[in-house]
Image (cartoon, rainbow, N blue to C red; front, side):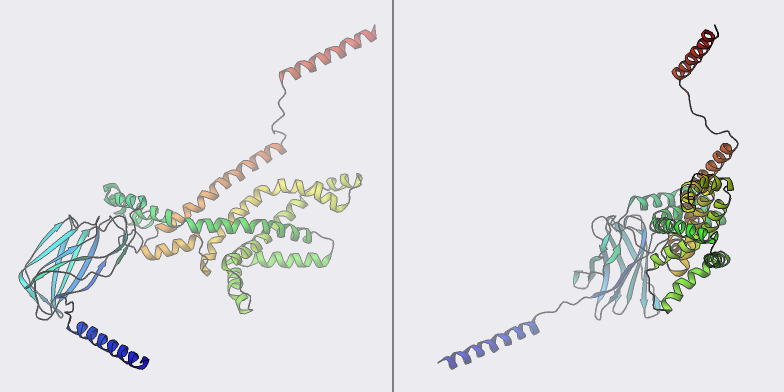
Amino acid sequence: MGHTDRRRQRGLLVTLCAVVCAFVMLAPSTAWGLTTSKATARPNEEGGSSVIGGLPTRLTWEGTVDDGEEVTAVTLRLPEGGSFDGASTKVTVLQGLTRSELATEVAPEGPQLKVTFVDPATQGLLLRLEVEGMKFPAKGGDVVVEGTYVNQDGEKPLAASKPIATIANTPLQSLLASLDANPVVKAWNSSQFLGMFFKPQLLVTAFATLVPGWFLCLVIVLVAYPIAILLGLVFALMKISRHRVLRAIAIVYINILRGTPLFLQIYIMFFGLPMMNINIDNNVLGVIVIAINASAYLAEIFRAGIESIPPGQYEAAASLGMGHMMTMLNIILPQTVRRVMPTVTSDFITSYKDTSLLSSVGVMELMMFAKNLTSVSGNMTPYVAAAIFYLIVTLPLIKVVTTVEKRMAKSERGGGARPKVKAKDVAAAEAEQDDIALGGVVDAQ
């Protein structure tokens, strides 16, 4: 009995499969009288390669008339927020590589564009619509171009295009659009020199794009320089040491690093170490290179500062029973730091600018971002924007160095600030002097 039921179930299953297959084969399939070939948009980002919503751009749509079809009209439709208003449309009809002449009527209206053919477009023709000045939705996203077409059977839906990636229209992009439309900016950019090196639109774009690279520059130099100070102080003490071996090591270290280009040192570190199976993150390696290079210059700065201290300071410390190490830590180095501070600050500025050389080995610092943006835009303005980022740091530091040097020079001439004396302290001192004088008179009597 169970065997009979199983055979009956198998028979029902086979019958059901046959019915489903017959339904699929007999069901009408979707056929397009006009096949959408592509829909693309021209990038409208100043100095970039993105399509920004809400800004004028060019949409290129292509479709092919299928066999046995005659198309009399095509309507393209954008999502909500898109617009064809004010756009100009160029209609091209191709039969293979041969251009066919077909009279058309174009009617843009908000998010919809209707193209009507006076004579029907027949099978095999490629229809190309180039819409200049249209706008995608300002909110951005993946935009799909849809619509309808009209053939001998009436109006039918048009196959949707592949999504066109667009980015949102930010305040930055709105500012760029206003600059593009400004007649003063247009006149400025008409100058070949100003347009190549100081293009306002690219300056704005570069300021927003270069920030990550600028931050990386600051991080590299702010991490590297304290390390360089410690190394420089160690090698400065080694160079003035009484031990010949320590002096020799310091001399070799300092002379080699100061006598060879930083560019060469970067290449040796970035390409030589991997050959010895020593792999270090590029950013960390950048910190190491900058720190080692700067330490050689700082060693000479510290050595000169230490040797500028008068020998009488050592003798006075020795007379107080202070040893060499205690004298160095408590007497010599504090005075040295004050004397070399302006020079150290100047060297910090140099090291900060030297981080630009790391772009040659792929570190994504400020100049690397500027180089990439220049390659995309074909304009030198991003390098000028990078220079401004450097000046944001270097100009205040230069001002600090100048102020410190003036104060030190004034202090050495005895013209430093004197402590302020309060009026009540002056009165008390005068009263004390009167009492002393009166006491002297009484004693005399």
